Amino acid sequence: METLHCFLFDVCGIKADWKMQDVLDEEIKTIQNMVGPDEHVICALSGGVDSTVAATLVHKAIGDRLHCVFVDNGLLRYKERERVMSTFESDLHLPVTCVDASEQFLSKLKGIKDPEQKRKIIGREFIAVFDDFAHELEQMIGKRPEYLVQGTLYPDVIESCPPPGSGRTHSHTIKSHHNVGGLPKDMKLKLIEPLKLLFKDEVRKLGSILNVPDSFLKRHPFPGPGLAVRVLGDVTEGNALEVLRQVDEIFVQAIKDAGLYDIIWQAFAVFLPVQTVGVQGDQRTHSNAVALRAITSEDGMTADWYYFQHEFLVDVVNKICNNVRGINRVCQDITSKPPATVEWE
Ligand code: XMP
Image (cartoon, rainbow, N blue to C red; front, top):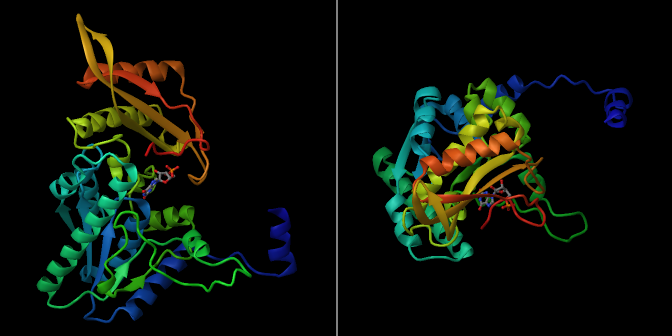
């Protein structure tokens, strides 16, 4: 860092006068010049940092000609839809349509156990829902939306550049958004990527200037396929999803109460389709087991498991077994990445 500092400021003589507020002002101007006065823009919100900051910025530039959609795929966490929608509407005043597609997703996932197949089905359904949304919007506003907002970050741009000498050309393709699983080809939308020169920490700073609440900016990453990759096997079996939501909420809330949320990269529960014998009250039980996973990481590419204090774990396990019906055993995942991945599926 010192060498780079000397090179940039002493040798090259450049100035460190770059401000996030200037980036915001410039981006707003660029979007206002790009999107004509009768043109409309759509954006799929995942509830994550990038799409939320991108949408908030575009909304500041063009107001309600931005149309956002948030899809409840039935695979969201405890009260996530209510929490996320209330922030979108009350705090950020974003024009968001919430589509409840949970039946549609869950009926397609019924009986499916293979992780890859589950992901593919979810990707396909997202496309279908998004397509319907775009068509309904067209009926409403009387014309096709022309632009699509993507929360592409600088690392995504770097990754799309071929290595020198590889013979490949730079192809600026639409990043296949995890949550929408790629977009219908016939939509022919032009892209608005207001974050494409920023890194994640800079997006958080920008979000903070835009008054995106900290609860959003500091949220742990959540995979596009949602709880489907955290209920092993068939997600529709029994009330696995509901049980997982309750366990996950207890675990994450305990982490927040202990002041650990911001130092942990990701923490979540996994529903195991395994029944074990237990004893609860005076009764012998034959119920499901869950696993708890908490990791620290810089970028999700590698990760270490987080070492909790003994008392913390005792308390969490008691809370889970006393409050969640159908769970009599709690395991902790103490595997780093590699060899394990962060998610179990
Ligand atoms: P893995 O399990 O690959 O996870 O070690 C690394 C990071 O990526 C997230 N993840 C996903 N995110 N769609 C997403 O949007 C996905 O299909 C997906 N799979 C994993 C995971 O939560 C972790 O942060």
